[in-house]
Image 1: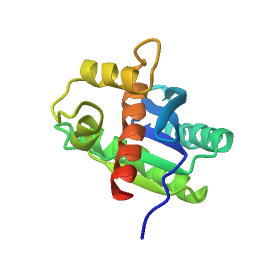
Image 2: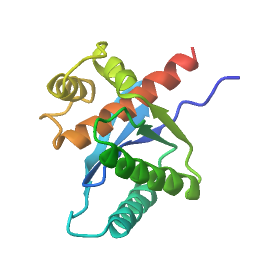
Image 3: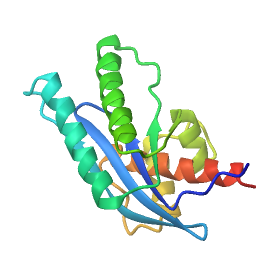
Length: 166
């Protein structure tokens, strides 16, 4: 059974200090960037407050754009176990927020995301940013890096869903 190609996709690059987001629209296979940025939390706050900020800000984005799909980067192996655990908690909040808003989610590895935008799984941050700029016809490179990554994650979802519908 063919899956409906989502029209509005919210890409999320999970993090505790910076959670990148990018909103793109897919209309007749033409991708348009509607918004991007970063949800920032202060290291001075305790972890539960930081997670709550991510939840509240993500709820605002979902309410504003009403995406058909949320695309999230999977947690990759991290040398720093403490960082991996904290980012994992941020991912959990993001997934729960999506579920509470009844927005379906898809998840992609960093390798899948890099391949989707650059056709090269080992692309560096600059290559990913340049390709996102070209694909979305942006005037300048998307900044910060977390936002560029989130846009790439959303593009990956569009490519994945398009392939599944062929």
